[in-house]
Amino acid sequence: MHRKFQATGHDLHSLLFSFLDELLFVFNTEFFVCQTLSITSLDLEGFTLEAEGRGDTFDRARHAAGTEIKAITYSAMEVVQNAERTDVYVIVDI
Image (cartoon, rainbow, N blue to C red; front, side, top):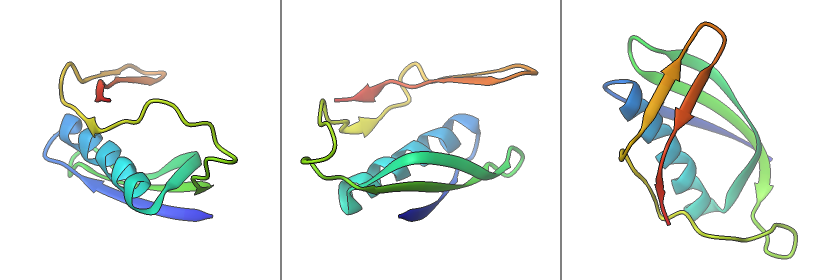
């Protein structure tokens, strides 16, 4: 199963929040779980993002279930960029 995602923001943190919130929304409404996720377009000047996810519909018989994420938060959100990689830290409400 294949799914496309789009997100926009007014800065890097709001873009990250919007993207993660979209992933959570799709899970909660369509029960889609990504096995792989690829960023296909990232505009750091206009703060837009496009991604493609491949996965399946969540099924308790096939997928492990644990603590449910209720919301994405801005609390202590951090994006650390350097020449080799970008690390993202996000706290979620459970």
